[in-house]
Image (tube, helix red, strand yellow):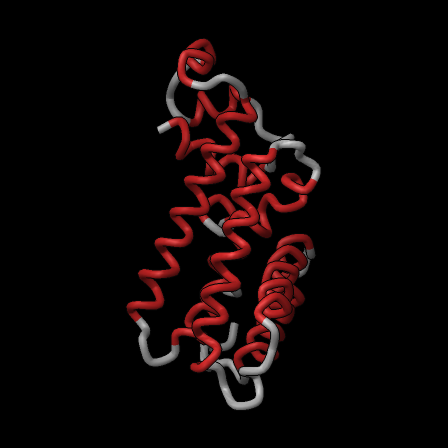
Length: 183
């Protein structure tokens, strides 16, 4: 319960923007019980980030299984969706926490991010054969970087039209003309 609450809050507020008291309150527990279960906030952040990464990976695998005809497009459109943009607490750790993790000196936290990046690269490489003609030769690292960057930018701009424009532009660039409904 604490790890799930921390996973959501950390992705919503960042590592520095989330306090132990906030996490314990979100879990419905008192602040005093924290140190009976965790050695430090960094310990909890590592566990919560790992849980968030595992949850997102399972959701992606499940989502791809639901759309076997166009798994590459399904992955890109899911990642570039309005829902993912608007709900960082349940989304990928990369656009939500990568900047914080880059400033961290925790080898365990960096290892989680390294594993998540590797998982995405492996998935994108595996899906390369299903990519539209002419797009299949793109480097998986460039695709991942473009997707993560667009989600970050779409979250920071104060204009929904611009945010949607950024997400749709990346879908078109990576997967070809979008088949999803406009808006």
